[in-house]
Length: 306
Length: 306
Image 1 (cartoon, rainbow over the protein chains, first blue to last red):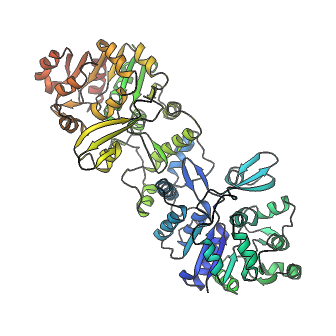
Image 2: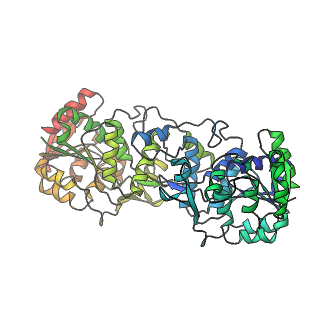
Image 3: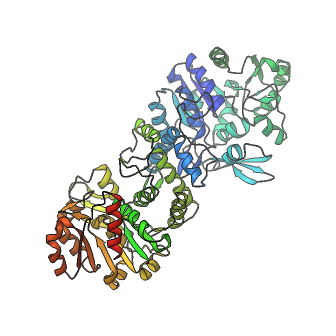
């Protein structure tokens, strides 16, 4: 069974880990958000791609949930000493990834090519594709700070500022990376990972052609709700939904994806909302969805496969 | 007594250390080669500026002679894991300097401004000026490898390839950094550090206006020979002189600088060549010139002044 997964970072990485236990590597394609990417210190940083890579390689810091185990911070200590931009923590090992990626991009390699090289170096054998090789950047509009980049919002301001709108710079001119459209067209199942709908999945959907395929293939598309019991598992998805006038619940998620998904996996805690989801012409699938153990993760992956 | 010193890396850094013992900080200006600079992994790397900074801060690795003490290599290990460009060793702490410099340059700061910020963060209180804020890159022509950049020659190929010519890319269009010309005009003494004449000092002299000032002020200019007993103290200066048809001796150095210097400090081992130097209308000053101890270094600095 071939599976294409639209991915943000941490939640997607966990679901992918489960999926690798239940499908063959050659059947799995991860299509990853790059709206969080940024250039800092001259380096091209791809947080969602790296979170997926490090997690699937079992190299992610379990304590932090991002970055690498065995990390040191010597470079950042120097940046701080100089009074530089130290709000975005880059470990020394992690820096090696950014140095490599940046140098390859300067040499003219596409982001998808470099990503393939990086994941293979970590022993990952399924396809991990950036949704686009082109410039795509998530910006958030705020009342107090004006328009800022996603990482300024998420990391520098600890997403502690109200958002009035979200914009995906480059979405009108970017193209899907080679293989993305093909994977979505031929996949027996398209999965929207339990990532932030507003700032992790929406930039993927903003790449020309992708939203349309999901609309056409709606019956084959399943999302895993990132909202459980009204709250985001991680990050500001619940706040963002409310700030944009939506409901911070599985209903809010169902409405967000209404034209794109045939079914929505919701946690047992939200079983009371299943009938509301069904009214939106979306199959509610109630299961244990918080991936706190390998067993739950694999069971969720099996449920996703259907 | 105000002193302006034309500098390469290691040899210049040692002489500056001695000079800081015998003149006040406000009397000393280091004018530093940036022909060795390069962009690698997207980072702006300035090896000579950093060697001077780290040495004067007593933070240089005494074992390696370049880079920082207490260095780790986690980032480079990752670059190697990816099969990336790992021929130019960048320690994790050192990377912090390149991250800061690159980010500041992207923000629009000039190299001289950023250099001032970096040296002050290390407690260095005399002026360290890149010779230019503009693009200036030393390229060497080789019979076997064609034209290559200085660092490819020096580091990647371990300067183990014959050079037929040297070219300074950007020398026709670059301008001296603010303060450089003024420092050379008002200095009571201009010192050419014991750096490689061909690839460390010549790029400094290639910046428009600088060679002319030295020619005009020849009587006030003193060089310290980087060739002692016919051999370079460090690096390929001796080979380069021979490959370019010159003599690998203090005579070769005297001829290289003939129109620019009024005196040349040569080591006692070369005392027999003093009369040959004098024939070139250059005062030979014979002294112990190999800076192996703090005492010799300070004594050499006093000789330079006097």
